[in-house]
Amino acid sequence: MLKKGQNIPEDTLQQLIKGCLTGDRSCQRKIYDLYGAKMMVLCLRYSKNREEAEEILQDGFLQLYKCIGQYKKTGSFEGWLRKIMINCALQRYRSKANLFRVISLAEHHKSLIIEEDFTEKLLEKELIRLIQTLSPVYRMVFNLYVFEGMKHKEIALLLDISEGTSKSNLSDARVILKKALTPNLKMTK
Amino acid sequence: MDANKPNEIDELFRNSLQSLADGPSDAVWEKIENRLDRDDHLFYRARFRFLLRVCVCLLIVVFALGILILVHFNYGHQVSRMATRESGESASGLRGETGDNHRSREPHSFPGPHSSEENIRKNKLSYSYMVIGNSNDLASGTSLKLQGEPERQAAHLYSLPSLGFQSSEPMTLSFRLGKNDPPADLTNDLKKRAGSGHSSFLSRLSVTPYFSQEFARYNLSDNNDSTGANGREIEKRERSVFSASGGIFLGYQLNRRWTIQSGISYSWSSSILDPSESFAVKDNNGNVQFKVNTISGYGYLSSSSAVAPGVGDSVMMDRVYSNLHYLTVPLIASYGISLKKFTLLAGAGVSFNLLTSATVGTRILGSPGDQLESVVAMHGLKKVNYGVLLKAELQYDINSNWGVSLIPCFKNALSPMNIRSDLATSPYNFGIGLGISHRF
Image (cartoon, rainbow over all chains, first blue to last red; front, side):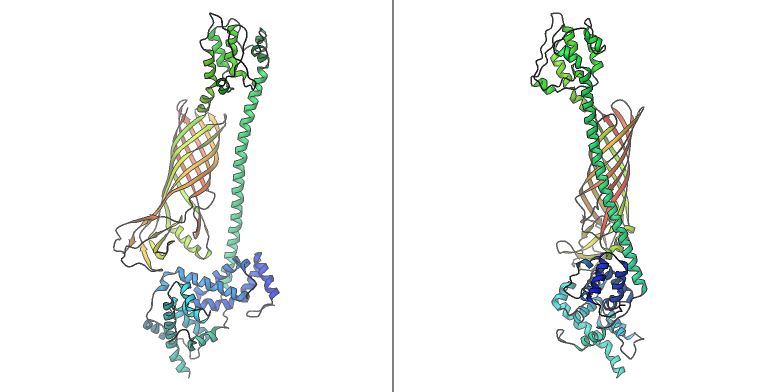
C-alpha cells in the first residue's frame, strides 16, 4: 500500500501513468493521493488563501490528467507535476488584473500586526500564511526565487516584468517578511 | 540587500516548507472527479457530433448521387421508350419507306395522307411532351433524308422531336415538296424546336427573393478548462437582439418532385453584452489594449486616456454591441408536393458562410472621452464556416409564373465559428421568411 510522501517505485508509477492514460479513475485517484498533499503546500504558497490554493490544485491535476501522455521519463514525475502546478498558479496570476495592485510596506505591516493568532512558535503553516499575506507579485517573485531557484531574468520573463522590478520585489518581500517575523522571533527568545 | 546572495529569510522559509505536506479537503477530489466526468461526457459528445456530421455529409452525397442517377435513369428510360415506339416509323419514314402501315402501328402518331397543316400542327402538339435532340446536330450539318409525299414528310418532320432523332451517323435532311405544299420553312421550324431545349431549361428555373427573421442561439464548449467559468459568464451576459437574412434562392426542378436550390444570402446578427469590467492585455501586435470578450470573438479597445494602460489594468465598459455579417451560399435538395395552388418544398442541404464583417463597439466609462463609442474589428473568428440547413417552403401560386412563399428554415453550424478562443461557439438559428417566387 502506497502512502503519502512515500517514494514510489518506478514500475508502480509507470502503471499508474498508464492507467491515467486510459482514463482509469482509480489510478487517477492514487496519483492524487500520492502527490496531493505536497502539491497543496506549493499551491498554498502561490495563493492568497486556502480556497484559491485548492482551485489551483484542482486545475493542476486536471491539466496533469489531460497531458500525462506528454510526460518524458527523463526527469522525476514529481518535478514535472510541480511545474504543472506552478504554471497553473502563474496562469491564474496573469488572468487576474488586480494582482498588480501595489501595496505599500506600511499597509503590509499593518495587516501583519493585526494577526492575533500568531503563536510564539513559528509553525510551518504560519510561514505559509505570511507568504500569503504578501501582495501577489511579491509572492510570485519570492516563491519563484526562493523555492524554485529561478534567476531574476527568468522570473522577469515569466511575470512580464523587468529584471530590476523582480529584484526590487524580492527585496521588498524579504523586508516585509523579516519585519513580520522579528517581533515573534524576539518573543520566542 | 543583495537579492542574489543567500539570505536568512530565504533559508528559513526554504528549510521549513520544503518537506511540508498539507492534505487538501475532500471536496477537491470530488470537484476533480466531476470535471473529469464532464470532460469524458464532452469527449463522447464531441465524437458523436463528429460522427453525426460525417453521416449527414454522406447522406447529402448519397442523396445527390441518387438524384443524379434518378434523373439519368429517367432520361435514358424516356429515350428508349421513344426509340421503341418509333422504331417502326424510323424504319418506314426516315429510311424512305412509305406506306399506310404507319397508321396501323401508331394510329395517333401521324396524320393521315389527307391531313391538313393544321392537323399536322395539332399532331405536333400531341408529341411535344419532350424534345430529344441536339440542335448542334442541325447546326453542324447533320440532316435527315425523308421521302414520300410532302404532307407525310411534313408529318415526319413535325413528329421528329418525339422520335428522338439523335444519331451518331451523318444523315442528310432534304425535302421534296410539291408546288402547292406547305409549310414555309420546315428547317427553321425544326431548329426552333430543337432549340427548345433552352426554353425547357428556363422553364425548370425559379427565382425566390426572400427576407427572413432569425432567432440565433449558440452551442458553447470550453476550449480552456481553467477559463470555462469566464465563458459561461459571458454567455449569461450576452443576448441576441436582432438577427436576419435576405437573399435570393435559385431553384432548378430536376423532375416533378425534386428540386435543387442554391443562391446567395446576406445575414447579419447583433447582440448586446451587459456593462462589465475589462482588463488590459497585450494584443497580437504587442500593444497593451483593453480586451472585450464576446461569445463570438474578442476585440481590442485602446484607451482614450493620455497614459497608456499597463497589462492587468482594468476599466469599466458600457454595453458592448457586437455585429456579425455573413455572405451565405446554400445548396439544398428539396422534395416537392403539390396540392392545387399550394406547393410544399421540404429540403436539406449545406451552407457555406463567408464572414464579411465583424465588429464590437462600446464606451469606456470614466475615461476623458467616454461619450464617444469606439467600434473595432472583432478577432478570433473563422473567415469561412460550414453548416447544415433544413428548409421548408410553402408556396402559393398566384398564377402560372408568380407565387408567394413562406420559408421556415433551420441552420446549424458544422464547426465552431471561432478560433484561438477560450470558447468554441457553434451557432444555430431558426428563421422564418417570406419570399416571392417567379417561374420562367
